[in-house]
Length: 165
Image (cartoon, rainbow, N blue to C red; front, side):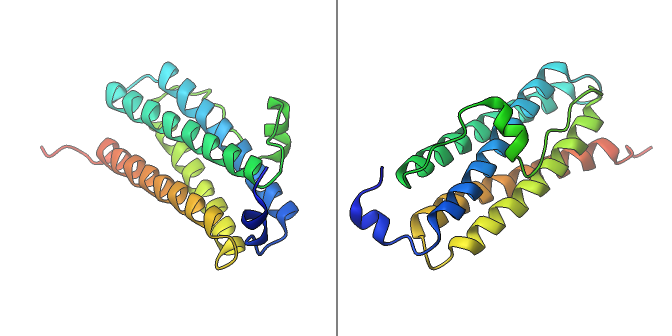
């Protein structure tokens, strides 16, 4: 539970903010699993590089989930307690890595990152100039998501650019 002064400075509807944060939490857990399992099943071109990138991104998503849970609790809320709630609350869904081809995995995860960027932009817009603590947390996560998209798009470019003859 957040302290009295910490509560006073939150200039937004806290219940609405908690809903946004829990939906983002659902996304982070699903993204974590999508990256983690994708790294395990990956097959094809640049597999080692892609596995390493997916594992690194999975750890970032887990760290984001931790940040969100801490903030939800600070705001007096309850984080999503059951995995089934992740599917009910998600903004971005879960793209099953049923095709383990590395190219397909990279493309799927780019789409996930693009959705995450939109989610955190929405949170930033909601709390801007009203809740500086949540703003800074969401900004830090957004910076990671933008970096993830860049990393994956660079890998996709490497995979799809023909080698010179």
